[in-house]
Length: 141
Image (cartoon, rainbow, N blue to C red; front, side, top):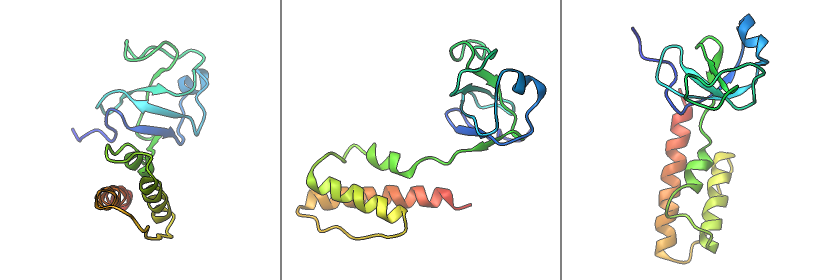
């Protein structure tokens, strides 16, 4: 048996091959969900309230649970900016605002190097750059 396509915590989107039961609870192509377990056919928590979904055997609130099949779902890539803004060294100093602006411009393909005033800010810049690099590398198959 091969490893599951999706892991617990992955964000997924319905892309097709909906079955009658999926349609009957109101699932539509484009709906998003969170994977609740590592399994070939995992329970998922729908972001939008289903009309007749379940609680995924106690894994989520009623009417949000459903089973997702790998031929119906695609992985939603993680937001690279989320990992940068969640970095513990990043706060709202003027230098950090410059770092965040640089990180966003780097992801948009237009990097502009900031002029930082302190060595601590330079260290945070290096940490943010490493986060952007990891995020971009994760997007390349």
